[in-house]
Image (cartoon, rainbow, N blue to C red; front, side):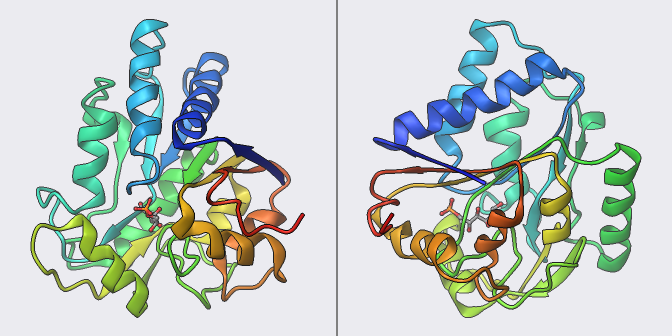
Length: 242
Ligand code: F6R
């Protein structure tokens, strides 16, 4: 695992965007799994700008959804679906055939998980995953305590995810479960970028990078990935000892 510390959020986002662009230049049919959330918002804006400037074609890429809130429809602006649609798919002109997201409204979520795992297998795995980290150390919706052997699964959200998640919604919303790729997908992806910024992420980054690798801190699993890259700003790095 590699650790890169950038002076601020803008520089971090610029570098994360460049990582994705460089991959797509080398591999135009790359399989990408990109998180929703506040952290990668600027990365995607800069990525779309750069793609336009440099005429980088994303129309042969495949996009795999990392996660979704169960029972939240795609038209709800707090959904991951809505976020990805507006921050990535629309700006890059991605067509529906290129996109594979969980249907978190399905009455058969087990089938949704199996179908997603099959798609990833059929695509011969994920080339690049870009993930954020939750205040409880979750990655996607791999909540504290989750097995590292899981592929796609449905999970009960812990109280931190339920309350922090409110920030994405206009009104108070019941968030009980998530559907998510598993940590096994993360470990099997050819490259993983974990990004975090701001002082509020400093403690979770310290725990993830300096305490023992353990499933109660899912973000610590990134240290088991030979091509894992942790990209953080100085504020998020401010509690690291080394
Ligand atoms: C979103 C996701 C979550 C977020 C995490 C950090 O698709 O998978 O794990 O990455 O909760 O969220 P922000 O970036 O809003 O702090």
